[in-house]
Image 1 (cartoon, helix red, strand yellow):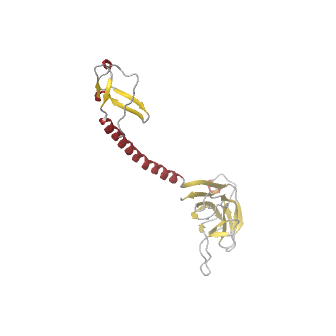
Image 2: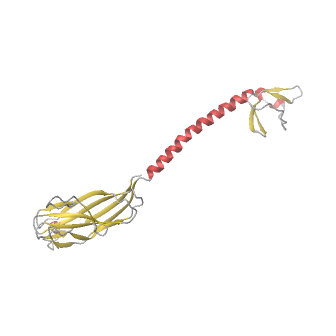
Length: 246
């Protein structure tokens, strides 16, 4: 503690007004202190003569210790808040989805893939380390039982997301076998792309079929004008999601 000083205090209560347990709030240059009247020595002239405030230092030390403890508790909370804030920035950031409701038909070719119109999605990543989650659901029909192959294409169809070619076997993205002319199957696929860029990414789908059969999107080959469900038309969807990983 600093050296003791005589401090003038105005408007002190009279002795008769003081009882044990009362406190005196003292405002001085060093700040505000609380003095317990129990520690005062009261003179015969009904004025306060002196104070024994050694116990006050103990109280101040205790308060200081409590403040340090509270401060120590706050710092981990600040760290947790920063961690939570960083975690909030992770996860799905945006979703783009396209629904194709009309039909599309082509004559198949073993090696020539035809882009399916209006079944694509464009997305602009917000971070270079974002990943793009691609989900495709395509309703397909064919003139006869045949395998239909699909290619995921990207950025004006100058890049394909597909398997490596192996000798005479061509690499594609996925495939499905349609059993009969009256059937409309669903082919689904999902994958992750790592564009490594904040430029717009355009994803689409192309298809080709075994033999020279007619292939159809969102309908069966027979496609009779009937209310029966085996002649109903379906939809295809293309969905991309940006996932921020950190």
